[in-house]
Image (tube, rainbow, N blue to C red; front, side, top):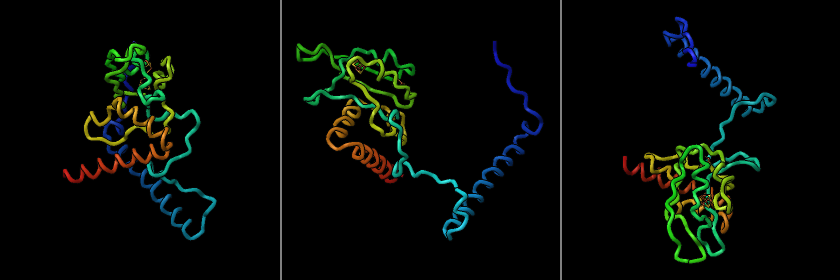
Length: 198
Ligand code: SF4
Ligand code: SF4
């Protein structure tokens, strides 16, 4: 049964009072925080905390152990992709954002491998179902790195097999901080390229 739309009163239908109310709330918080931060500079009102913004990605909160970061495709000891293109992750994915193209592997011991493996991170809801579904631990979300938050076109948010495998390589060789460093470098390069194009 359809849910009836909420009825708006006259003030809500005029919008302006609500807009002014919103501006009032924002201004109140702005003035409060500015005052408290200024007082803190002089060692006053230390017992009253002011809001602070975490300067992500340069600054990061401590993530919990269960934090689901950006995906990565795990590697075999010889550096090849562990994925066998079985499509279980794509089938389990509720957002239908994993796209795999399977190919015959030249090694007769390996049945299949992903010629193409892509995740559309604009559609992904970071539920972790793909990780749960994988029978061979070929996909993980243990990077502690946020997915890409910067881009101009949809393609910027599609993570390819190379990107997903590259994360495993950086992680194994240089650790999580290097992975974050790589991401920041990517942002800065994108930013510089965008500024040049202006
Ligand atoms: S985290 Fe969830 S939505 Fe994202 S790719 Fe995996 S299964 Fe799909
Ligand atoms: S990541 Fe795992 S579940 Fe997905 S296709 Fe590869 S082997 Fe199958």
